[in-house]
Image 1 (tube, helix red, strand yellow):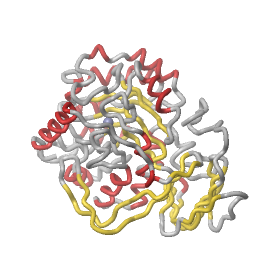
Image 2 (cartoon, helix red, strand yellow; image 1 turned 60 degrees about the horizontal axis):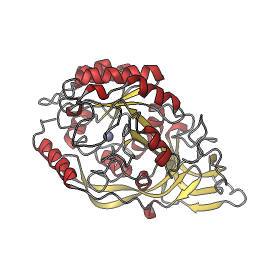
Image 3 (spheres, rainbow, N blue to C red; image 1 turned 180 degrees about the horizontal axis):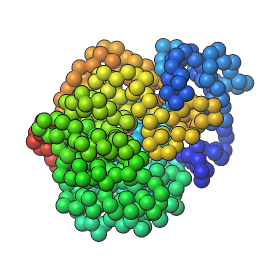
Length: 419
Ligand SMILES: [Zn+2]
C-alpha cells in the first residue's frame, strides 16, 4: 500500500480519504466477531465504522446493494508470489479477482532483492502485501534450479537484519525443503529458525518430496507455519502408502504449529485432503500459492481454492474463517486485519455463490464436478472500492524454461504415491 505507517499496514496518510461506503443488505460473515446473518456494514475514513441492522448512511456515502450476497472481511491469502523479478512472480492485482485484500508473499525475495520488491511493488500496490523474506539470499529466482542447492546462499544474519528493518510488513522467514535444498533440508530450516529467532518472527516452511518432512515437523516452534499440508506428491503429512497421519504432524499441531494449504502447482490433492479429513486433520488456513505457473490454470484465485474445500464438505462459514480470521492470527495481524469489528481496516470481500456445474482441478490434474462456486463481486481495500471483474493483471509470456517446469511437474504427478 502507498504511504504505509510504520506500525500499521493501513494507508494511514493517503492524500484523500476514501469516500464513505455503506454495504447494505448482505449476509455478513465475520468469524472474529461471531456475526453470521443479515446486516449492513458501514465504512468511513478507511476503517470499519459499524456493522448492524438497518444502518443509516453517513453523509456522502456510496450505498452498495449486497442483497443475495455474502459480505466478509477482506480475504487474506497466506501464500502467493508477487515479485515479478522471479520466474514465479505475478502482478499482485491478480489477487483482487479472488476477493483478496491482503496478499502474503511467501518468500519470493531474499535479503538482496527484498528492498527492490518493496520499493517497486509493495509500496504502490492496490492490494496490501505482507512478504516473508526467504532465507536464501535471492529468494526463489526460478523454478528450474533450487535456491538452496548450495547452502552458502542461506544468510541468517543479513536476512534477520532485513526483516527487522522492515518489521512493519514482514511477518516471517521462508524456507523450502525438498529438491530445492537437496540433502540438507534440516540444516536449511535451522538457518531459517536462527534468522527468525533473531528477528523475533515466525518461520514458514514449504514441505515436499525429498524434504525430510517428519524431521522438520519436529523442529518447528509454536506459531511456525507448514505450507503445502495436503501435497500428494510425497513428503506430506500422511504415510505415502497407508495414508496414516504422521505422528510428527499430530504432535506439531498440538504444539501450535499452523498447517496451511498452499495449493500451488503441486501441493493440493483431493484424495490427500480427504484422507486427512478422515483423521480429523483440517487445514488451519486456506491459501493459493498463486504464481505464474498456476494463475491461469488449476488454481486461478483464492475463492476458487475455497470452493474446493466446500466440495470437500466444509461450510461457507468455515472456509471464510480459514481465509480471514485464521491467517490474520497466523501472521500476528488480528488487531487490524481479518475482522469487521469497528476500527479495523476497511478491507471487505463481497462474494456470490454461483450454482451450476463447475469443474475444479487439483494439482495432479484430477477434476471433480462442483455445484457451487464462490465468485468475488466487490472488493474494498483500505476503504477503496474495486470491481474485481475489471481488474487488469496481465501475466508474462511463457518460455521454453517454463515448459520444462510444467513437464517436470507432470512427471512428478505421474510418479506420485498413494497419498
Ligand atoms: Zn509458493
